Image 1 (cartoon, helix red, strand yellow):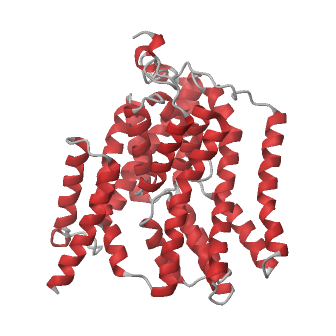
Image 2 (tube, helix red, strand yellow):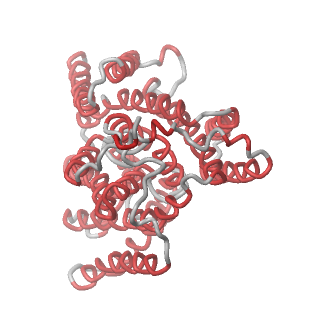
Image 3 (cartoon, rainbow, N blue to C red):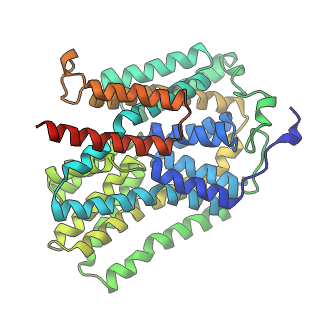
Length: 444
């Protein structure tokens, strides 16, 4: 194929439309988010090649914060500079924040309504189908040699059977990649390009494309950090002059900023930390409320770490004696301080990502991190699948939820064979959950 056939950059309006939709349909956690982005950006629109997609994903995996949101920020940055990254990252989070705000208000006013949970329970089998397809697609591209299969298998075994943390496994993959790069570089030679030259030229962002913002210099870094610091400080004026108890708001801002810096290895690694501090030490909410918040967060689109927004809501609500306004402000402040550092991490690190593209030593290490991602997605698939297939928690044939298994298979067929749009599958699954709840209610 001639390189002149390279697709043109999408307009900002077109990209903005996708990021807007992504925020509302990104159910199911990191693996499902990655699956949706890969299906649209790589396979359908060809805005970014598979090699560049996986290269960026590997970098995002080793950064603090939600990987899928950071991947969206990076791709948005590659397409339209910083305004593209800001749009992608913000729109990825806003829908889940608004949905969780509505659910939080319903929760404190009416309690945890079972029909809401039932509607979103219909989504869970569809999410399993999405994650399974993501696993097959990413594994097919990422596992290119024996060493990658071994690393992926070791990562899965470590996480699933021995509960080894993902950051520790990624550190091991980095060390192994560096050692093999020096001792057996031939193991990675066939991996220097995940796509052929012909394939690469089919995509707008490919291994040959350059960005005007790839230069890394101390001046731009200082400017970036300074801007982020000013944005971080801005809400303090509101807290100091217009609301009561500045000490509470200062503590909330510092706590969730710290949370953003320790979110390495996925939401499941940081949620226990948030729960321990906010429940046991700060007494912002009860253990039962924390568990309910986790359940609510699982029913919303966006990253699971958005559960911290519920914690912020309950912190403000409880601290100010049942004030819905203070609860809402707590949710908004928590979301702001949790996700602001993600933009800093990506914008500061993106030029470094660009400079490592095409370097065999770095590519070899990152290919092993991508193999770890495959193992992590498999672990997540089984973790989520166990809760859907065996809702009672008992691993026995008689405990299998036949209806959920049937919907997983149906979702796979709709996605794979009939190529159903993810939005339609989500709506259909919500209707399925509501219908199942009504039938069960009628049978009682």
